[in-house]
Image (cartoon, rainbow, N blue to C red):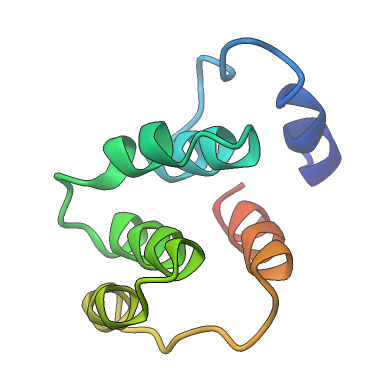
Amino acid sequence: MTFLEFKDSIKSDQPPLDLAIPLKALWYDGKGDWDKAHHEVDQLNDTSSALIHAYLHRKEGDIWNADYWYRRAKETRSQMSLEEEWQELVIRFL
């Protein structure tokens, strides 16, 4: 799947069946459903999920919590716009 195909899939009611959890969370976020996106990664401990979790808390405006999750992901907080970070994360996990 390409980035454009992923972005186009957001028009559907349900995410594609074969999406890994980080991409599924980003898919829900792309649809504007922060709660479902957060629910996808909330109980997971892997670094990929931690990175998505960090992005979501940054988007929420909870920078302290975002920084905690960026550290768990062994990353630093992105300085790019939220839209750019979302795109970068989608591409990274595709």
